Structure formats: C-alpha cells, structure tokens
Length: 302
Image 1 (cartoon, rainbow, N blue to C red):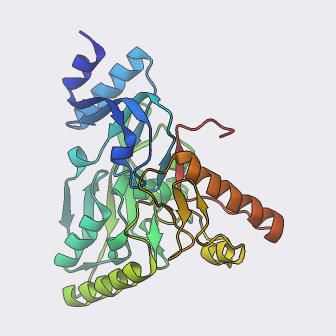
Image 2: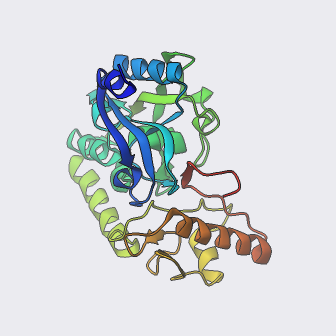
C-alpha cells in the first residue's frame, strides 16, 4: 500500500497541494501531502504513519498570520480546521476544538449572552492558531480568558493549565515547543447583554473596515508593538507607507499591514519588505521590530 492510501484511511488527503490555497496571504509553495484527519484517533494514526515514514510535518489552521515560502514543502501539512471545529458552552465556560473559527466563536458567545470574546470578532484565524500566538486586539487577548488547553505532546493528549504555558504578549510555550499541538481549550466567559455585545462588535467592525486593508490578501499586523510605541507609527516615520516590492506593498491604509497587492506576490516580496523595515528601524531608531507573522518552510538565512 502506498503512503497516500495509508493516509486516506484516516481522512482526506491532497497531494502536491499549493499552500497558497490555504493561507490568507494567498502565498505558499506546494506541499507533498495536505491532510485533514477525521478525528483525534485519526490524527494520532496520521502522526504514527508520518513518523514511520520519516516525513516532516506541521499543523495549519486557517492559514492566517503565516508567511509560507514559495519553495516546495517536502513533507505533510496536517489541517485541524474543519474536522476539529466543535464547541459548546457550559455554565459560562466555552469548550472548543482547535479548528474553530475565532470569529464564529465570538458570534456564538454573543448569541449566548456571554462576554469576553468581542475582541476576537475580527480575527480571521482558528482557536489553535490564536492560542499558539496568544492572539489579541483592543488590549485583550486569549490568555486573559484561558483556563487550560488540551495539548498533544509526548505521544498523548493531556490537559495543561494556562499557568504552565508561558503566556505573554503575542507569546506562548507553543512557539518554543513546535511539537506540542493544540487540540482544544476551555475559556471562561462572563454573562453579558447580547445587544450591548453586538453593538460593541459592530462598532469595532466599522473601525476595522475603515482603518485596515481588508480588501487585499494579507496576514494581519506584521509586527508586534514595541514597548510604549506603535509599530505602524515607526513604519510611517521611516517612510515605508505605500512602499512596493514586487507584488507586495506596505498598505497605504495601515502601515503595519503588508498586502499581496497584485494577488500573485511572492513570499520573497513580503519577506524583503519585512527585512528592510526591521533593518532601518534598528539602524535609525534603535528599535527591534519583532514579527507577529510566523515564517514557515524558510531557510534560516532566508
């Protein structure tokens, strides 16, 4: 039995799949295998097969907040998007799987009269990805709500308290331990008035639409905000607003967004702009700009 047939026993498998189809940047080279495991047991079986075959892998959710290189990924991508998207509310606690849309969870919480996730109503990522980077907005983030996370590590699934996962601004222990995979999580929400929650979400939606380049493929904010400063202001002061490199550009609407301006930008176009901004911020302002965007399938020097 060939590898594809083995894997197909445990979910849907796409072969030589362009990753640009699965990222919000619409950028990324082909992966040898793109796998949707059907269940936790199938996920475990897929990992076992890949280990036996000596095949590298990584997990992807909704493909936001990542910059995948244009070169082929000679390995597997495991997607925990659609297959892992169940959630429920119990006594104010949200129990959700890693593939859940953050936007969908925020909407469901509002309908159930639960407050806390309003900030996530405009974040186009999955819960798993959000917990990986501690996604946030409007001075709130997921770690503020988090109780614990179901983590796949050392060959088994276990519940890990938030306190053991090193949560900080745009940081978690998952960024250091790439082999730890978020499977699900529990978040503590608070009772709230559905109408008031909806009004807050609507006002923030209008603010995003007026201030962010939502009409272009992008990955959200590129850089973390340094201490006591805004990354967009630093980029503006350096004169990068509207700067173009190949098919990519620093947004004229919000300079902490680099967009796929032409629709066919290369990963190297985006990477070039990131490096130029970082270099000038360091040399001219003494500021180290750290990316929020996660780089996947790059050489260390690239």
